Length: 450
Ligand SMILES: Cc1cc2nc3c(=O)[nH]c(=O)nc-3n(C[C@H](O)[C@H](O)[C@H](O)COP(=O)(O)OP(=O)(O)OC[C@H]3O[C@@H](n4cnc5c(N)ncnc54)[C@H](O)[C@@H]3O)c2cc1C
Image 1 (cartoon, rainbow, N blue to C red):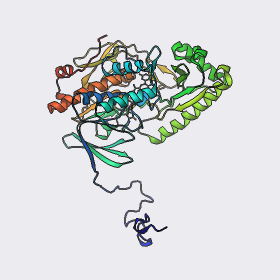
Image 2 (cartoon, rainbow, N blue to C red):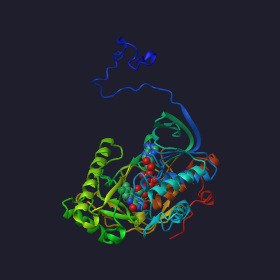
Image 3 (tube, rainbow, N blue to C red):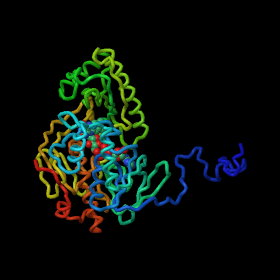
Image 4 (cartoon, helix red, strand yellow):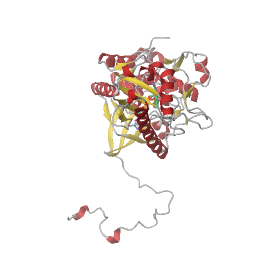
């Protein structure tokens, strides 16, 4: 075959050696050549991360007249609800706005079940996709935010992404970090916290969709039985010689014969360690296969149990918490504090998974939560003037985060970030200078008070 001028070898033997003075064989660092990155688009609002928070942020900004780009690293929208396969929505009862309307749409389709709001992950994908398309949002899947250009005045001017289209730059007026792990905040040079002061972090879990058994045949094993269901599932696995790494394995009923399984804990997995993330996925997937085989052997009712799919994304409960104008702290929760600028009220308990030595389940760490306000200031980044935070990467301490991290708060927080971003664009102000009265008038905090 004649490769002509396209020969990838560099055009001849004499040119294939390493350039002078740049021998990388023993180097610890390799200098990457500077390059011009093409500008792929300009938007009023750029949202990094298309989980529940990011989708709500993008919708809220687009509904208020902004041009919006939504960048998502995985192959679908929904984050933990879809690529993470954990679509059991907690702390949603006292919420209105986009979350309520999305859940109502899913209920209308017959795609929500259970005493919480366990929704069908595939239905969630299509509902979110339809909504962002109708809103005219430019969505980019499989596109990871990998860098940011920040001015000397601490203004995020552009984000850089990596995808099959190569490296691209996207210019925006206001940015929203909804990556869950605070990637954009960190890439923009913002301060952040991760884990507790001793560097401990909550356990991660890989969830799975399983099927092949009727829900009516195994009511005693289901999540609806609360601790009873978890205990019996644990005992079954233990009897079969496959004691689970998560001591409260949970089976959520999705429909008459489909279930979501959350049955493993991966300990000390940090969101910025690709090797640890990979090891965690491989270990978790192997464990799930062993668990299903054990259940099939041990309980005749489960003989036909099958794995439909394991999640595309490892579920990370903790990521970076980016510094903002306000830090939600444990005492806010214990005292049920009101705030002058609420975006919604958190009511969920402190829920810490596998962070403390010897705890392979979850614990409230002895703290009781009274309904508390989540303030808009906790969404406004301290170290970048045009960056908002949405979802679990807002600013809070480790115990406050363990409560507000759930979807029933992440989605309304995202909606609030989108509204604030739209006002900042329309008024040509940094988010910090948007008045709370304007925020409310624009539809901020549409949630019934509890
Ligand atoms: C195992 C597990 C079980 C849980 N169980 C429940 C439960 O039962 N009920 C409940 O309400 N909550 C639960 N949670 C909490 C739930 O994860 C959070 O509420 C929710 O994920 C927060 O939404 P988010 O949008 O902030 O983050 P995520 O859902 O994590 O979404 C972030 C999105 O950003 C994308 N992304 C990340 N980095 C980049 C990047 N650099 N560039 C572009 N895109 C990026 C991700 O792919 C993802 O789609 C659970 C969490 C875990 C991990």
